[in-house]
Length: 267
Picture 1 (tube, rainbow, N blue to C red):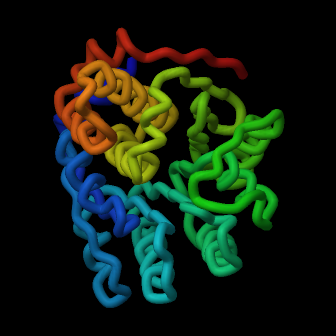
Picture 2 (cartoon, rainbow, N blue to C red; picture 1 turned 45 degrees about the vertical axis):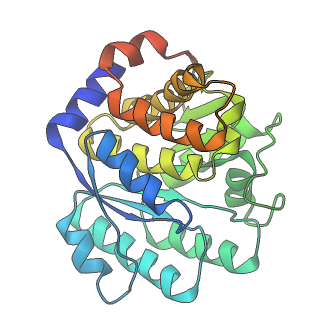
């Protein structure tokens, strides 16, 4: 099942408009190329609707916000909805400021999302409407994390993906717990942004199977984190690890994903 998601993505080669975090833009673009998709990145309100119309899918990342970028996110999201293109939201650090919380509120009110990916704190903030914690890297999961994910999915109609020690994927009813990945992935800035881009590519190419596409993306990123870590030598650090993850995404086969994916589900 998951291997078919990779095959379909490489066959369709979707063009994904990715308005992302400036810190991780280059890595997101290379990851999209590696998984078989292509990226275009535009964040000026004057052109985002036109660029969105050229593409097959859209990823909206709230990292490093400013009024111009936030306006662009709304314009692009509405245009993608009008065209029937899937939209992925990454609410980076949504609890860090009132501006980000207000921007997320507007986005959730005015744009229909196919998927929302964040850490436990970001998802809790979206559910509560107020800051649940501080910082973009706070991801402590607790007993409420699964309930928050299900609640946000039911409220928005989106696949909700929560990344952390155990990654979660839910449509509000079915919930998958993914046990792939490696703790060293926390040392790679923008790993979450890269996953959001991968979710965008997989869902765009597999629009009829959004749940399976989201699950495949989460498992693929985790499996590639494991593959990359096995390549490290005593002289390597997080810079090498970052490159090895991108290499692993590029070389990931359907069979390797099927054999390496480690997940469980309940309803």
